[in-house]
Image (tube, rainbow, N blue to C red):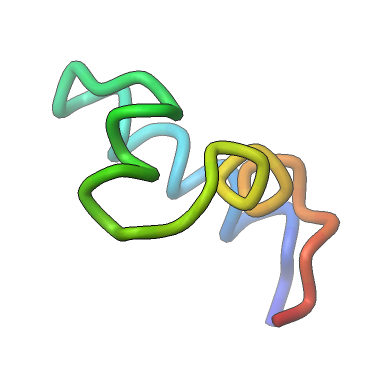
Length: 45
């Protein structure tokens, strides 16, 4: 899986919904730090 492309997709979808990283994190019951890592492509879990 290409983590960079996945991160770009998450960012694009999040912004398309008009959500901040904090708002998305709250909806998914994760931390905003996790969302940031996903979007930067540095999380492997």
